[in-house]
Length: 288
Image 1: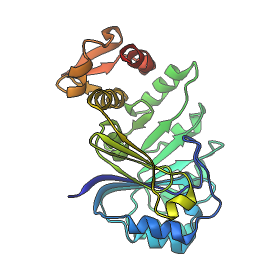
Image 2: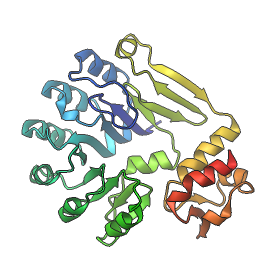
Image 3: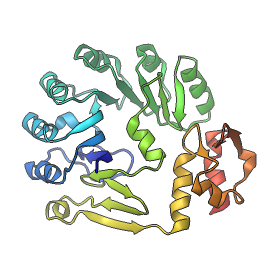
């Protein structure tokens, strides 16, 4: 059976989970990742902030073993777009780039990617300075910012021809992140590498952050078996991150509908969605 989605963690940089980061990745780590592959996959995302810090031979050895049917995304840093490594990405079918920049200076890196033949580029914005990003007109923008002017920032993005489909994600038509939609539709996915998580039905696993343990075959730091209520709660929580919300017929909505504060929700063509994403925590806390 084909896996819906695969995430691979290359631990060079982690601004979300706070796990350990490495300046160099041992060949054994790449070998273990390859050994755990059993594609083909519909979607693959390789993260870690700066995947091109891998040696060229490591990058090629890994990519050539990954079989992808549709979306093949990789996370890069604007400061490290090495030309010969970009050619390796093209050679093995990478068709979506998620570009990060610590100082939000995207222009040079973005244009370099365009010249290398990449059109589906997402810019990962960690602050509120959007002028440069919007001027570049990328296919997709992810923004991680919660300041008081959050609403104005969202409106600015929408006025430039983007549609919001998830709490942090905006795209031009047809350029939504398949991986993001899999996560927030609460579909099964597999995670390989340090700190990566997997989800299969009512079972979640979280991989260890300890390199020695991982290389010695001790993959999981947590295996979580969700009871029915916890499963429905996580399903509801994830789907409420989506602009379309959760279907009224969804089992998770049906389970919690009498506990939900509908003052913060609205019905949209058979779906129930947040009126404003800033209400998400309030809605969830009401039913815990």
